[in-house]
Length: 431
Image (cartoon, rainbow, N blue to C red; front, side):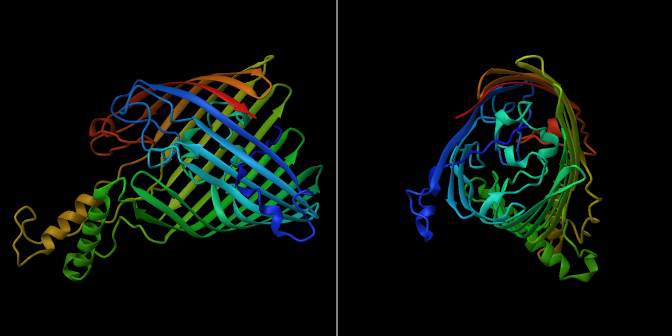
């Protein structure tokens, strides 16, 4: 699949700061992309979303919604000569604050030491998955969107820091290795996610029509309540941690470690992928596993297989995907001293235990499997129409509540088996 270079106009002044390169000598290229899509859901007890950051979607918030896939981006790339280039990209999509505020996705300078080695600094893509470079570009994908079940594991698409990359021809193919070091952050409906001490190692090997990809990400993740969108979140978490401290101060309670952690969580994510694109056939498959301390961000694993076949301008395709919750069992509940429903002022530890146990018990599993069938039609150069029908099977019970990847889920949704049917139509374009 040909690579698509896109961006935004925020970096127009980059070339002015480097001696030996004037604005007149610098080569600029402006391009962009966009998707307009609508999705329908037959479910009324929860909202479908393609990314964790989307605060709502079709379902509980309305049968039809456009925010799942609709987005636009523009990119400005600059070549200053002598191996120095710059790139800036701005993306407008459905954000955690329920707006379509522009976000600077890329803003960096890259120096090519030679044809096989480069160094880059600034804001850049985070190559967690096989198609990270074109993840925001609907036109570059065969399907309407990459399978939610796997790409749900890491919604953060960029980072701020340094990137070192090298490539070498070996065994008749090309081996590329990248190392990213820095930090990242983004906003959800109720929280801000901040990753520090981030290190990402990616390896890609291309030979003929095949591409193999492996990636390992490690960071320290902190979750900050975002009061503007969920006023009760801070108060609830403060009450929880105050109760935890009270319990930990009394050894007789037998409670030492909280289940809900929010600061400097050890986070690891690794993925493996393979793609084949030749002779009208398109095949992609990926596996990923995430492990994070505490129950607020759950341990998950996911995989998918996509197969498509080009027939003229049409490309019908099928996708099978699965998301599994791998969170270990919670720590034992706090010991209750006295009557928690009528606590004695001389035994405040009872209410603390009640708060802790109720909060710990609020952790909801995230599991589902999906089958999707769709077709892509290349209407004209740089314009593609897509239609996709998807069935998501989500288990759930009172003993094991499960929301899958859905948002704004009711107790009825989380405690029962559900079969969600989605229909999506999109227009993807480049300019």
